[in-house]
Length: 105
Ligand code: FES
Image: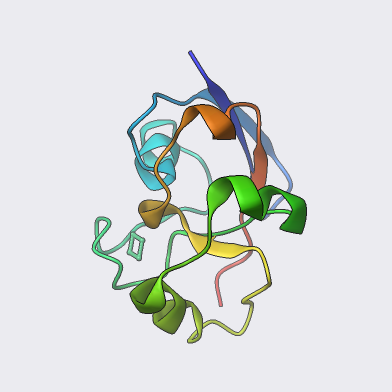
């Protein structure tokens, strides 16, 4: 089973099993990862599932589409590696990656 690591806003590490095909939001919620509220349930409408990748990992992860990017623009804490975890689907390429969860805006 692929693994994925979330670092919570308080810098707590959550190393979890990450089934291919599930969104990173679903994986985080299922594992009670701190800092992912996912208020809209994955509808790309709340931005409470914000995560930040290292810039180097973005080529594997991919970039936000227009709708996701528009929502990310509302966040003061948007960074180059920002994504909404409900819009990132786990795939083989992401096995072993680590992502940070920022404090909410
Ligand atoms: Fe609401 Fe991702 S869960 S935007």
